[in-house]
Length: 181
Image (cartoon, rainbow, N blue to C red):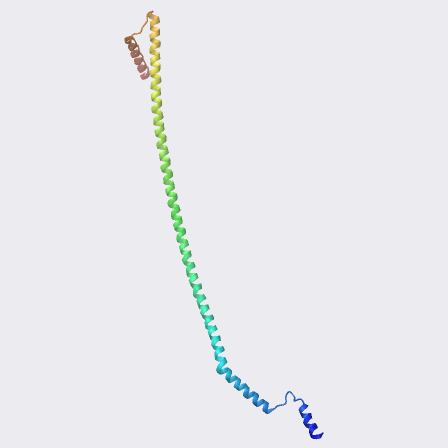
C-alpha cells in the first residue's frame, strides 16, 4: 500500500487554490496572449470600426439636427416677418376699404339728398299747378256767382260771352290788385 497508496492518495488529493502549477500557468499565459493577439488582429478593428462608424453617424445626425434647427429658426423668423408684413398689408387694405365705404356712403347720401331735393321741387311744382287750378276753379265759380247775382239784381238773364269776359276781367283785376296790396 505504500507506493500504490501514495499514488492513489495523490490522485485523489485536491490541489489548493493558491497552489502554483507552472505548466498550467505557462499554457494559460500562452493561450491568453494568442487570444489577445487574435482579438487585436481580427475582432478589435471590426469592433472599433463599428464603434467609430456609430460615433460618426451620431455626430452626423447631431450636425444634421443642428442644421435643421437653424433652418427652422430661420424659417420661423421669415414667417414672423411675412406675418408682420401681412398684418400691415391687411391694415392697409382695411383702411382702404373703410375709405372706399365712406366714399360710397357719402355718394349715397349725396344722391339721396339730390333725389330728395328733386322730389321737393316736383312736389312744389305740382302744388303750384294744383293751386292755380284751384284758383281758376274759384274764379270760374266766382264769375258764375257774380253773373247769377247780377242777373237777379237786374232782373234779366245775363248769358252772353261778352258779359262773362267783363266779369272775369273785373275779378282778375280785383284779385291782382288785392294780392299786390
